[in-house]
Length: 516
Ligand code: XMP
Image (cartoon, rainbow, N blue to C red; front, side, top):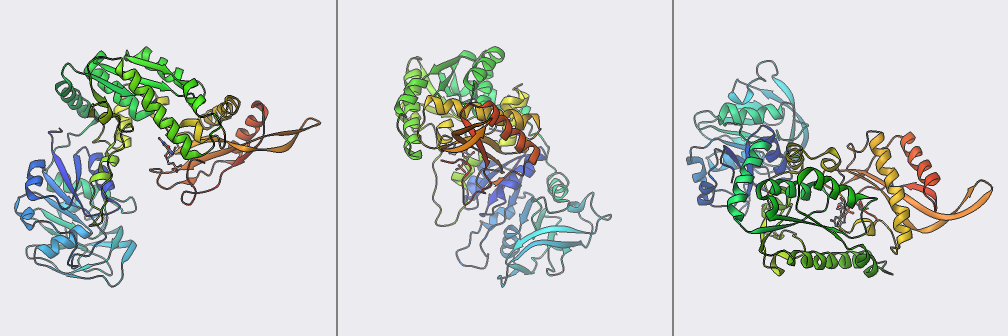
């Protein structure tokens, strides 16, 4: 558990809550998101040094809207309310809030009215700037002890603060990039108002984890499924530092990886990190079971079950295994704890297909407090190379869901060659890190072409390259036409059996990133 200064973010269901947590961490202060309906006792047990109340879609004047125990204001902690958080502070401390007639959404011009620790480094040079509003209710009367710090054209009380109590409230969202000085305002709350110490860094995180894991695991053994992706590799290298050869990493080659991927990752990790690595070559087993299968969900099922079978077999060979290490990240954790209103469905974490229960293993999830960009920073601290840190996400079922139709050794070979060209060209052109994912897809059809004087009748490859922040939504990347031309020319000239390349220009939704 992290022992430095900590900010508790109470989530009232805003789409920006994660962003608040990230902004706080970017300032070097650890932050944790919890649902707004946790009890005062739970808050005390978390022991935060400051609290932020997030925005949310509800209206405080509605009977069933989420509230907090007003005793929270007597804890003596600095509190910042954002949007719904502001309305809640006003409502609970005796102000007046008017229900929404229309929601105000988008850019607004904020006018600062007086100096305040919140405006450190902003006032008096910048008395008017753009902020991002998204609210329904409006505060009509502010609670006693508060002063007005800023207004907008349509809202009299856009920012209020009670200097003695250290309680501040903003009607706009400082956490979004469209708000000018948003970063500065958050930093001012953390350092000018709450007087926190920035002690959250990736090297302090690593030190903490190493200590904790050593105590937690003792003399037991731990298994870890290594996929070659950044999350599982960081878990493996981190735990290896703490546990040495008590950690057993199992890399299952399912025959559906990219060209030479398995060998490259395994030999790199063996050479540089002295990992206790079991490289299981199960290509034939997977490909045999996939023979004749064309349905995407059927493919996923077969691959999932076979993976568990192979992993379990290998893990059982190791005596004294009590733990399974997994690369669960903070967004997965938040997903299952966030406040989503009365109809919330709590999603259980996806772990390696029920393995921990089946094999009676306890879970270690050393990255469960981290966002993806923080995992990358940990990876860099641990000395992992760019080709692992910046690797695009790769689906568990691998190339099986990028070969539309049946998977055969010949079709796998064609896709691997085409995909290698896509990867190389994106890297060469400095586009690899600008996009979320880029890959080739092999289609189940042949088309007519002409090469030299000959008519050809060969495969079509689709190029899929997308921009995204979290894979929930995505848009096709606007690659330069010269790059597209080079990729297409190279695939058609160099990959035997392909005479046509098409570029996928669909966004998600309604399409998905993968084709199957
Ligand atoms: P879709 O195709 O749903 O993909 O837009 C969203 C993200 O998830 C990855 N993906 C998968 N990952 N097993 C995985 O481990 C799967 O079955 C799977 N399907 C899609 C995809 O690569 C993208 O990053």
